[in-house]
Image 1: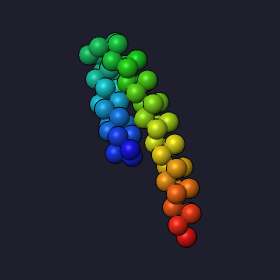
Image 2: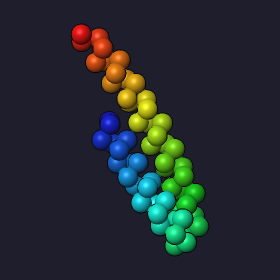
Image 3: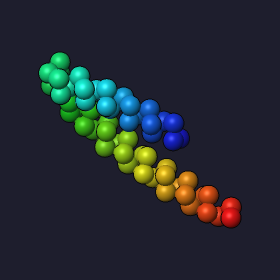
Length: 57
């Protein structure tokens, strides 16, 4: 799942580069949405991974 979160993060950054560069105004909004979704997924999975890792000790 962490790979999926990082994948969304990379896609959103690429879309942001194209969108903020003036290629398409709509892709900037999509990039913003994808970026925040990727950040939320990343943080949730990071916390879940830390919680799972701490129970093994």
